[in-house]
Image (cartoon, rainbow, N blue to C red; front, side, top):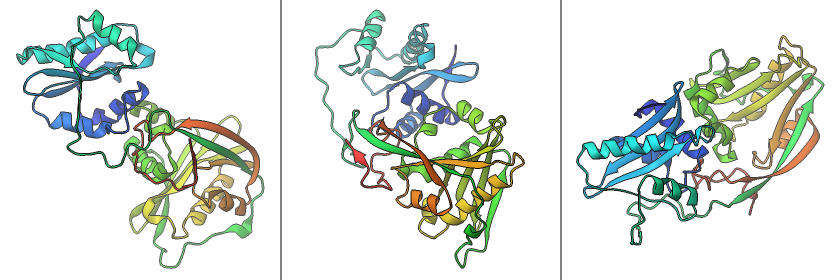
Amino acid sequence: MNIKKAKFDNINDLISLWHGCGLSRPWNDPTSDIMLAFNAKECEIFIGEINSNIMASAMCGFDGHRGWIYYVAVDEKHRKLGYSKQMVAAAEQYLKSHGYPKIQLMIRNDNINVQDIYAKLVYKKEDCVLMSKWLKPPSAEHKYNADTNLNVVITYLKLTNRHMDNEFELPAGMNNAILTHVSNMDVGFFRYLYNNVGEKYLWWEKRIISDQELFKYINRNGMEFHILNIGGMPAGFIELYFDPVIKDTAEISCFGLLPNFIGKKIGSYLLNKAINICWEHNNKPQKILLETCTLDHPMALLNYQKSGFKIFDKKSITIKDPRSRGIIPRDIILAQPEANIE
């Protein structure tokens, strides 16, 4: 494993690692923590790479009295190989090289396994009580805890007939719209679209994967991306998947508008464009699939049905609220305010 100092272009992969290791908390925004570390004079973040992929991390710093270690993480697939010991050693060496006499760290009471790991590294429990006070309170009250669940109903739909009478035009005054096929989608731009379009619908799955994993996803054989620009600004996007093996099926796998363009009667137009692109694809699909859920826009299911889609299956699932896990900001108001939060 190659250990080195983290840089700005490692931020997304670091956050993905911390989410995957369960280190994130709603009241600790990981991006803010990283930026505080980058801007502090006596603080450093170390990353451990295997084949150029970030698999481990450790943050360390000095508060004027003691050295501290935070965010020691190792990807689940690479544990029990001594990597956590190497990351702690890198942090210790940094603090030692600056002449700091003592290192401290905090472990949550329920994290018994980690306590044992540090005990083997000759760390000892102190006879003291940790107390804290927010000088800059989080943006919202800690409404969600780690056990907050969401009951979600997923609805699966398919379209098997082309309805020529469902052609939608843009509202008056928006004739400067351009739908562009993006042949080489950039990882950073995809994150911008995915995060901003899907935030209030709690799109979280792509937020927690690394840039390398996301690059593989958006470059899969059969993936297609189309960006709607209005007045030179991105207004929405379409993600399509044309299975290279099952060629009679097309899938609208991701679809939506950026917040500033919602409520302007653009959604039906963009959906219609997505449908037409599917029908006209070289695979000559016989059906188009998509899915929606109870976290989606309140009018989503009805709009899909108006475009000819028929429900063929439903499934109920329970997920951990991504806001409670620090993946999406806690103060985001859902598009479906009546979503069932237990």
